Amino acid sequence: MLKTLREYIKEAEEKKIAIGHFNISNIEAFHGIYNAAQKLNVPVIIGVSEGEEEFVGRDEISAIIKEVRERDNYPIFLNADHHYSFESVKDALLAGYDAAIIDAVKLPLEENILLTKKCVEYAKELGGKEGRDILIEAELGFIGQSSKLLEEIPEGVSEKTMTTQDDAKYFVEQTGIDLIAPSVGNIHGMVKGGNPKLDIKRIKKIREACGVPLVLHGGSGISDQDFQDAIDAGISIVHINTEIRVAYKEALEKYLKENPNEIAPYKILKPAVDAIEKVVEQRLKLFNKIK
Image (cartoon, rainbow, N blue to C red; front, side, top):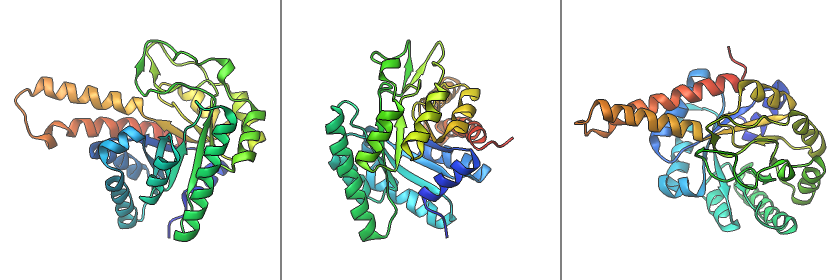
């Protein structure tokens, strides 16, 4: 019998490794990610934001993940990434998702706490009824909002918007969340000239203070050394999205340019699947300290 996502996260913390979280909005990306995870035999989390979920289908992707997990007895999990309302979190959990992120960073702190706590209480209630261990995560601090190539660091992101250990501790105590995603120098998206460095000391202090596992959002474009140091300091899950989107697009453009008369989707999209698999395999090796 497979362990729960919570148990895999705990195991990752103990081993000083991290679980890779990769976003999808179509079945091709799913295949690329799952192929890489299976090759290395490591747990993996599939994420779908509200927009991605709307395109790929909330119930459809949940059914696929559940079927694959049961068929292969494989630790693959589904996360409702960046959902902005109680209703959207509720719908994802009812559809069978293993975890959800309630993103209320734009709200005043106390409103953020109330909304997050409501999601936590609902997850516990639903999990109790259905015999499921559902995780709720929240983001604290501001790191931008778009998974795309950027000319510069997003407006509003600075040291002032980074998470403090005291804020993280207070937030966890008030909400009861299972995971927290802090702002520690990371950003959503990739800056063309290079992403800023992570504040490793801040990560370590936050993990020690808040008492729950940390999730690093905006992993695309971060250096290998920063990843290794961040994982050693207390990061247990790493989110990657922009990198695989770029790989997908570049492979697709290259194939179409070289094969302008091809119209079979399974031929056109195969290089894109392979490109995603290559990126994910590299990242999973790094996160899991596999040579």
